[in-house]
Each structure stands twice: as C-alpha cells, then as structure tokens.
Image 1 (cartoon, rainbow, N blue to C red):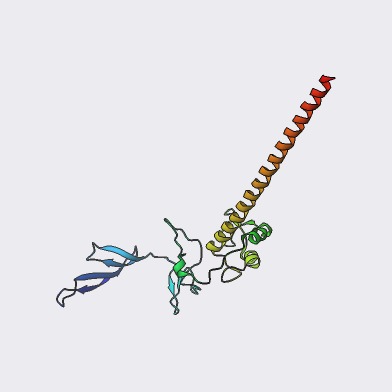
Image 2 (cartoon, rainbow, N blue to C red; image 1 turned 120 degrees about the horizontal axis):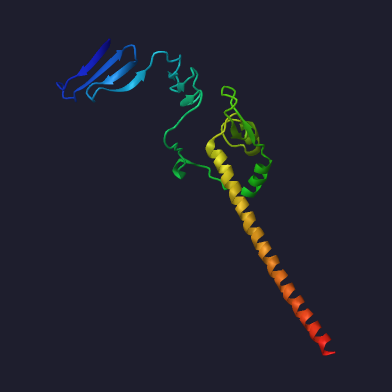
Length: 201
C-alpha cells in the first residue's frame, strides 16, 4: 500500500515523484525519481519514541523528552570523525589558563573505573565523574555532565604545565651536573698535587 506524490514539469518546476508506503518489511519514503532510493525507513517493532521531535524542536532518539537539539538515550556509534566547533571566530571571553594550578587540581581529581547503570557490568569505562570535575574546574553547563572538549582542555593545560616543570628540572639537573663536574676536576687536581708533593719528599 502506498500513496504517490507526483509533481510534473508542467508548471516549470523539476519533475519529482515520491512514494509514501508501508509493508511487512518497513514503512518508508521512496525517491522514485532518484532511482527508488529509500531515504527514510521505519522497521516493524521499532520502540515508542525511537525518534521523537519535541515541540521545542529538540530531537530525541530513544527518549520522549529530549533535553538538547539531539538527545540520544543510550550509546552512540559514529563510523567516521566526530567534529566539534572550536574556531576562534565562534568564541568570546578568551582567558589564558593558569596551567600550573590546574596541574595541582588534576593531581587531586579522583579517577574511577565504572559502568553505566543501563549497561552490562562487563562494559567498563575510565575517567572522572562529572560532579568531581565540575567541583575541581567549574567548566561545563552542569555538574552532571562532561564535555569532551573540557576534559581534553584540562589534560592539555596540565601537560603544558608538566612540560614546563620537566624543562626547569632538566635545567637544574644540568646545573648540578656541571657543578659536580667542576668539583670532581678540582678534587682530582688537588689529589694529583698532593701525590706530587708526597713523591717529592
């Protein structure tokens, strides 16, 4: 069973034909003009609110109460690259980070292994909980959520601070090694002089 929506080119528009149909395999929209592709399909047995568009325009996948433009209740799998807007042109109030202090905060941040309540106990993950991260750094929109970019930003800032500490420590070590070398040469010279004096007698 199907309903066909057909536009001819009689009015000067491009001809296009769509079918809205359903059978034992799926409910679908078929692009007849475009080679009978099926850009939209719903399989029998799909759960309630598998896709749910709220009055706010938010889209829920697996939820009837989406809290964001796209709210996925469950795991998300991306067979490609996840790209997040991060251009300077999209940001304001840029403030340089005191990375040294952030390294100290990161050292005190509890890191856990855990699994989600809805997942199998064997599906383990590692990382902080949002409440601890928010209390330590204050980044994000809520103490119950973590933005991957914030976690990465903290890790990068701490890495920079650690790198500066390593460079400073290397300088100190190099200075101490140079001082030790001078002392060893002075001691060797003194011992050689003492031996020469002893042999002279």
